[in-house]
Image (cartoon, helix red, strand yellow):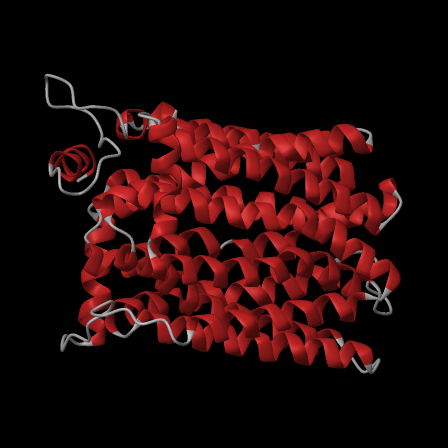
Amino acid sequence: MRGKARQAWAPLAVPRFRVHFGARLLSWSGGAIAPIGLAFAVLGLPGEGEGGGLGLVLACGTLPQALLLFFGGVAADRWPRVRIMVAANTVSAAAQAGAALLLWSHLARLWQLALLAAVCGAASAFFMPASSGLLADIVPARTRPAANALLRLGQTVTRVGGPAVGAALVVTAGPPSVIACDALSFAGAAVLLAPLAVRGAAPAPRTAFRCQLRDGWADFRSRRWLVVMTWQSALVLPVWMAGYQLLGPVYGQRALGGAGAWGLVMSGFAAGMVGGSAVALWWRPRGVGVVACAGTAVMAVPPAAMALHTATAGLVLAAAAAGAAASLSTTVWTGLLQDVIPPDRLGRVTAYSAFGQAVTVPLGYLAASPATRVLGLRETLGLGAVLITLLAVLPLLLLPEVRLLGRPVTASGRGGAELRPPRRPRAATAVRESGA
């Protein structure tokens, strides 16, 4: 147990990781309270109580992120990643500060909040691939799984109390205060990251931009298991995000009594994520594909609980189960990608995968409100739960590579990659054999 404890906390001995970890904790703290502030800010605008305006704002926040991820991935492999992260945090801080000022002055209009959300989404498209690639630059391969788990744990810890704090701020100080706190957290993260020096983190190759895009696409497409799992996320995420981020606050307002009760549900989800991240610190599962699909299936529990009109306490437990499953599966999946994808292409391949996951989310936001008008709120949530469950099991049924992904190679040569450091080439070779 002492050895496992040392292994779990080993990344914190790396000074550059501590700086990166601290900056992420600061921005996550603001991000944990921002969604509930934004949701009730938009729902408080005249004529927006049904959620249609919130769906538009959320769609505008995710669409630029999806469309610009390709460029963000190439930028992360082409230019210094720390500079990209600092610039993205600065832009997000300015956008959130603008939104808070508009709300404080009572001049905010729906299109203004949607535009500023789009700016934040565009900044995130560059931040995400750079952040993923930076971890491979600053953390040794042997401690990278623990580093991923620590980052996930830090993110989820901030989300435990964040929604409750955000709900309290919404009630006492109003939504603009919540969004202003998020702006300050982005600015603080940029200040922390600015002096971080990473030598050779992202060399600037002379290869043409379009050639780098093409190489990244070829690397992504050559792994059939990655393409299939990206398709799964592309279909599941719009259903989940629309149900949790859009219809969830509407359900909280109608059935639970408002922001306070829905904040408890969000805190339950975050508490579950803490538990899943803690498990990921100690457990290195062999069947990564099975864990990923099982985690997706559990995410159907909260919308099913809302469809069945479960009491607040039961809904909090359902959200906690979904959070634990999502955190564990995401952590082990991220570690697998960092193990089997070459570091100089990690930003681009990650961007292609993230694009496939994010590009359909705006459609879910835009379709959720019309669906509730036709079917009803609880019926729409129940249909979403059924769809998530079916989509979770399909890759396991249809593709052997997903079922075997992460398991040791058998005597016949079939199987997936073990979660091992890249110095053992068998891992990457096994994945190529099963997926290419």
